[in-house]
Amino acid sequence: MIEAVTTVEARNRFSRLINRVAFGGERLVITRRDIKLAALIPFNELLLLMQLEARKDALDAPDWEAIRRGGV
Image (cartoon, rainbow, N blue to C red; front, side, top):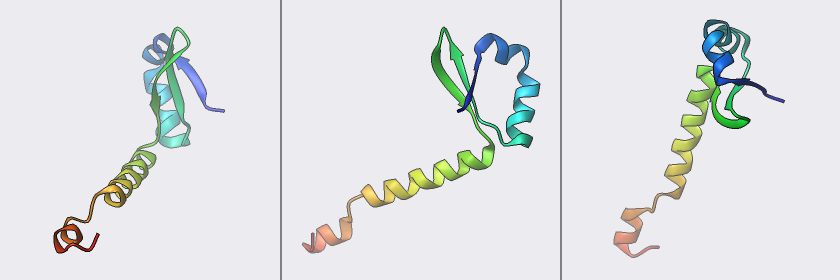
């Protein structure tokens, strides 16, 4: 389970939370009034998510050259 911290707690302990994420590999959810607002994740995980998103976009994109040739 990913630990949740309130926005107030995140503000007061920001440096420590960043260190836990960056050096400890932890993931944290930031909440306000029990509503999940954001997540803190290690930067390498963000890069992985961006790569996966780019691959998905490439798979979803139409093959315009094949369409132009009438092959699709």
